[in-house]
Image 1 (cartoon, helix red, strand yellow):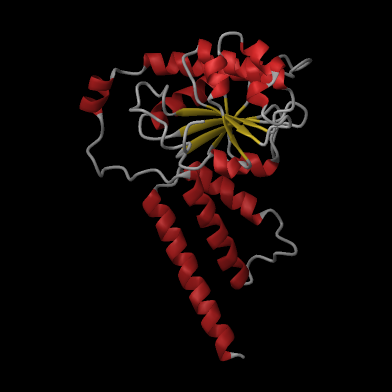
Image 2 (cartoon, helix red, strand yellow; image 1 turned 45 degrees about the vertical axis):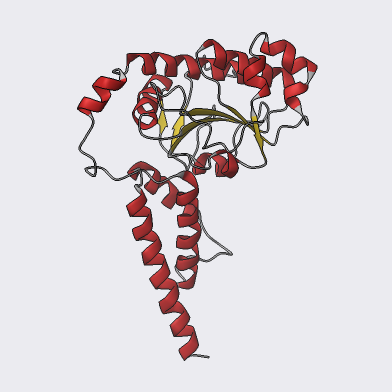
Length: 270
C-alpha cells in the first residue's frame, strides 16, 4: 500500500491529484467498490477509508465486483483509524451531509462547493468527506471540516446512496477542474508570493482548538462540565475565516500566554 496520505500527491494538475475522497466508517463493501468506480470515471484516484466496518474491504468480493474495472483505485485506498488521520496535511475539506446542522460551517450547493474546491486545490491538499450509510457524519466530524455541502435532492425522498453522492460530487469537481485555466495561465495570473499566507492544514487547526480550549478553561470562561456549545460556535466562526498558518500561530500564541498567566496566578495563590 502507498505511503503517507500527503506524500503521494504528484504536482497539481487541475486539482485531480490533490483531492482526496474520504469515506467515514462505510458499512457495505459494495458501496466502497462503487465509490472507487465513481472516482475513476471522473478522473480521480485518491480514496481514503476511515475505520471501515469490514476488515480488508479492498479485497472483499462484493467491493471488487462493484468496482468494475476500478480495481486499482480500490486496491490503493488508504485505510486510517480516524478522520483526523484522513485529513492530515489537508488545507481545506468539505463535509457532505443530508441533514441540517445547528453548528458547523455554512452549507454550500455542490456546484458552488466545487468552485471553492478548485481554488483551494490549486494551492494544497483538499478532501471531500462522506459519512456512514446509516447515520451520516457526526456533528464532531462536520465541525472538523472547512465547509459543508448538501445535495438538493427530492425533499420527499432525499436519501442518496453513498456511492451516488460520491458520483455527484466527483462529477461537479471534474467540471470545475476542467474549466480552470491551464497550469501556464494559472502561474501567470497567480497572486504575488507572500500576498496571501499559506492556508493552515487541518491538523494544525485542530491543535489550535485544543490549545484555545485549554486557555479558555484556565480563564474560567469555559466550564468543561457545561460547555454550552462554545467550542462549536468558535469552530464555525474560524471556518468562515479560512485560517492561514500565521493566523493559527497568532491564536496559539495568545492561548500560550493565557496559560502562562493562569499558571502564575495559581502559583501565587498556592
